[in-house]
Amino acid sequence: MKINYSLGSNSPKSFQAYPRGGEFELESGLIRKSRKSKSPRRFHPFEMIKSLGNRINYYYKLHPVMLFLISLSIGITILVLLSLYESRYRTMIGYNKLDMESETYPFADLRNLVMVAGHSVYMSSSCEKVDKEDAWFLESYQKHPGQAATFVTHIQKGVEITSKDNKAMLLFSGGETRKDAGPRSEAQSYWTVAESKGWFGEQDSVRWRALTEEHARDSFENLLFSVCRFRELTGTYPHNITVVGYDFKEERFVNLHRSAIIFPETRFFYSGTPSSQTSREAALKGEAVVRTQFQDDPYGCLGSLRHKKLGRDPFHRTIPYPNGCPEIEVPEFFTLRLRKTIYQGSRTRLQSRNERIRLMLCWTIHLGKGDEC
Image 1: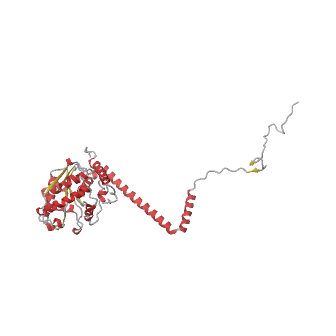
Image 2 (image 1 turned 60 degrees about the vertical axis):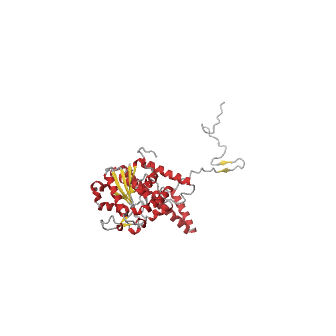
Image 3 (image 1 turned 90 degrees about the horizontal axis):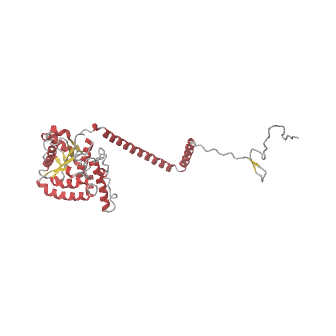
């Protein structure tokens, strides 16, 4: 006999040992509701901003002055950073344009530099007194008979050398160095004298390539700034450099200034002319002192050389370099930012810094020309 155990249905029903809808504890006999799993919290930016605003409002009520100062300092910092970024961005764009468009350089075909270092400012409104001392602004040590004529000789010598080299640029170098002379530069004075003299018979050949560098305050800057000005006008650095000046300054330029910028001796020339007879003895003594100073401080950034530069900048002219010659990024040369803190320590540290700057200049000026530093 077959017995059917189904309870009114052909399909068996599952048996639930414990009630559903919760967790059953055997010991207590109670049913607890199961915990719902928490969904991950979503990011709500508006809630965060609202919370931050509430906190700021809370701190503002507690410390209004302090919060104002903090906000002001943050705002000023942001403005300064934006200003620096904009300036750097514009400078980089300018450099890129100069590199990409060779036609922007008005004298791209010139390769050599002839530099005439200025020594005084021409004061006369008449061009007929260029060889007279009272037409020039002279310092006490310059007031000697025949001094003005030496300036004209320098100008003429520069014109003559340039006329013999159709790839040369003539630069008169010298800034607005005399307060009582007014905002007139030595360089512009020399150019004006050359103009009044009809460029000594070489007007057609030289005038169009005779320009000025109007920021130099000493002999080292005469050379360095003229190199930068040449780069600014031609798009490259000079292959040969000829300096025109007093004969007793030859050692300073050839052995000290040339060496300071690591320019090859074989491509550096000096054309010296004599000083006036009455000033020669004093000039030689003064030159010995200045030469010793540049031996100790090749870039003229310390001590008496630094003070002399500051004294020769009565109108606080802003030095434009290294703009125009961006490869030379040694701001100490152009802004006198060197202070004693930079040179604290031993003499070796000073020499090490000098060598680092020298190497930078070496690679800048002679890159691609096959010269060794």
